[in-house]
Length: 370
Ligand SMILES: Nc1ncnc2c1ncn2[C@@H]1O[C@H](COP(=O)(O)OP(=O)(O)OP(=O)(O)O)[C@@H](O)[C@H]1O
Ligand SMILES: [Mg+2]
Image 1 (cartoon, rainbow, N blue to C red):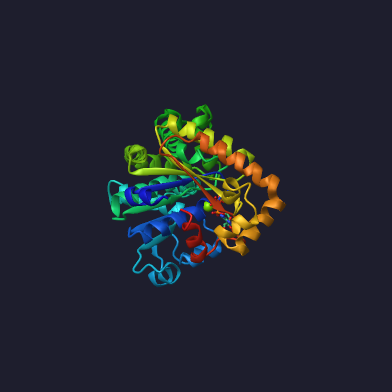
Image 2: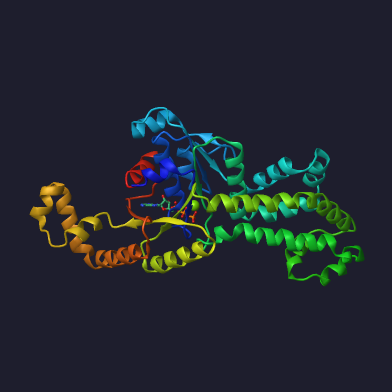
């Protein structure tokens, strides 16, 4: 179903609230894309340990790591598949940014060795959403993957990710430039209290450092950093354009619960306001047989057996009987969800698997639904 997207698009962003299955779906989408012959990378955020291990990420993390083509072949039957996986390492991404974009080696060293930078970079590295955007920019600009699947960080709301560049820019823009330009800097520590709330984050960092050297370090770091601010701005705007282009698609993963419909509606509206296109919704952890029950509510075991064989038909009947009220609810939810979608947007259901999905086998099972 998603083959057309996997064949035609370059960037797939997998969004959704915390714990819905973003990392799992991103990895499955990437695996499926790779088996279609695309040179693919999946940028994962904090995958569960067993999944990371099975993707070969246990040691390397921040570097693209090739998933063994032999292992993929054993699982999928497809030969010579090119699938890289990498884990977002936020601190390292930030250091790489400084290294790559500092105007010269002296500025680079000045920043990387600055005490304030160490604090600041740890703080900014906390902004996984932003760093994922930077990494995406890097991957698009400096590598030749056909397909880049981006997992997004665990957030309470799926939209946090979309707003990351703007938030980051206002943080960098406001607080840094203020600190940099306000003459109060020269007045000593009490001067900082003159600043508006934009400087609060910086103050938090400064609080951790004492001593007279502080001011010199701050001034020095910000001065060096100022030369890079334009770059931050232009990359954020590049990423925005890239995400708005028809080469990028957004997929929303939702849970199978009451909140999912209103969340999806909210997400869709938010995306429209950001001029981004939601390409489809994947509802994860559905009842395995709800598709059958939706279409064949009235069919009896005999009829079902003709289609599915006796064993499966019996299971379907059993599940229906036990779970009927829940399945009914799910069907209503799915109808509501579909009614949100416009022409061209897809809706997919992934069943709940027994046990976690933690290896290539599990990812491939999910991929068969994509
Ligand atoms: N369809 C499924 N059936 C069974 N288990 C699933 C399914 N989808 C995901 N899981 C399991 O649910 C857990 C959470 O999934 P995952 O880590 O992909 O969610 P996430 O949205 O990335 O979470 P976070 O927001 O914390 O990053 C994992 O252990 C995964 O193996
Ligand atoms: Mg995740």
